[in-house]
Every structure is written in structure tokens, then in C-alpha cells.
Length: 215
Image (tube, rainbow, N blue to C red; front, side, top):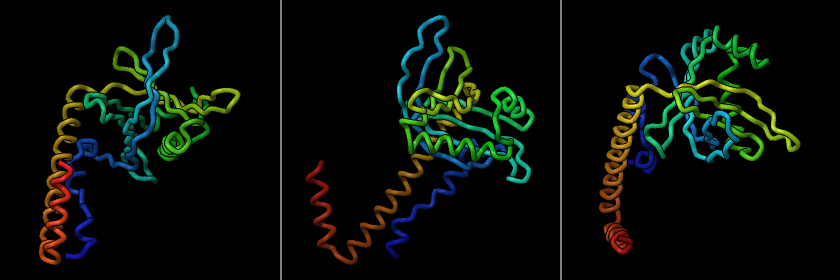
């Protein structure tokens, strides 16, 4: 067994259990992005939002030559029941394109979304992702750029809160995925222990002694 084999984890079988791809979609982006979360207050002053790390997952149905639909899923490690989705096809995108005067075609929409999300990660002071939640199921994600002298809204995406059934499926998957990853890493740790015990028993004893001191 090589050192590379000991340190390589294949999570493919775990990722294939993801309910997000059960209906034919495929994941093209999956990262935590700093979001400013706000509540939409009717007839009241705009409240200051809270900054949280939100997991943004971008999925597409079809390929680059025949893109059928795009979906964004938002979730949070801090709140297992936080789950919002944005789904749009080409006909729906045309309405958004006209309303927001977007100079981008539907086929390029996923790349534009990914670029904006990455900008919020790399340049959080100048590129903002503001997620405005209403008390019902609706929400809105605004991509805003700080131009020093003013804030410019680049694009907005309409979201809805995921139905309870989808939320439950997502929580179940995340629990099982975490459990499977833990079991896999524990198995690899045992492999390392066995290898060290075979090659250098005194080193293993030293490692075990150090571990007990930190308990």
C-alpha cells in the first residue's frame, strides 16, 4: 500500500446518493459563499442582515449544446432546515432577461452565476450576495457590486423555500454522507496504524502516548 493510497478518499459512491442529482441534473458548482441574510420587512426600515456561510450548489440539466434547465440550491451547515431553490429554463430566463436587461444568453447563465459567486468569495468587500427572505416561501438573491461611490445591482434570482419533503431528503442524505465519510476515514486511519505498527512499532507507541496526553 502506498502513501498516496492511504491519503486518497473516493467519495464517488457517497455523492451518487445525493437527491439533488436523482432527476438527471448534474452538479457544476458546489462551494460555501458568504451571504448577507435579511428579512423583508414590509412598511418598515431596512434591517441590517447577518453574514453567514451558505452552501451554493449550481446544477444543470442537459449539456452545453442543449441546456434545458438550471437549478441553484442553497443550504446551511448552521441550520439543517435552511434550503432554498431557484429553477429556470430558457423560456423563463427570457422574461428575467427582459426585466433585468441582462446582456447574457441562457447558455451562458450558469457561467455568469459561478463567476458572481466566486467574486463574492474572492472579493467580499466589493461583491455582495444579499439574500432577502420573506415570511412566506419566497426569497430573492441580489448580486451587488460596491463601486465605492454607489452600490450597483448586477442581477437578481428568485428563490422559493424547498418543500418539507425535499428538506427531509436533503437532511437524510447529509447525515448518511457524513456517517459514510467518517467510517471511510476511520478505516483509513486503521490502515495507517497497521502500516506504522509493521514498519515502526516504536513510532506508533509514541503517537498513541501523544494522543492520550491530549485527552
